[in-house]
Length: 124
Image (cartoon, rainbow, N blue to C red; front, top):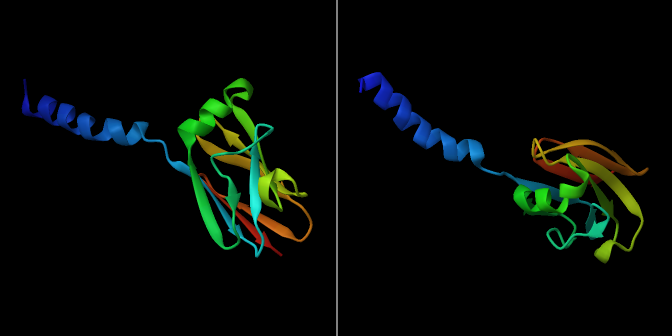
């Protein structure tokens, strides 16, 4: 086996685990109140209640299993109180195939920023 072949095999051993890694999806609450998330129509145990000025993450593998019946797009709805009982303040979509977030919107007086693996809710 040539030195080049050995180098390619060695490099692939280190790259493969990184490519298969699932990044967590983080929701950051930059409001003063508590928010909660409903994923695919169910109040999310993964996110629970997110207190003001804090973040919470959920592994994308877990979200994929919750979203498997609506794959690839799964809706995440943020409520302005604990236990998904309050008004809807924002929503966005999670793509279970690409493991990234997509389009979203916020209620008046709120701002939603969406990046690939992070969603930020602010009071405007």
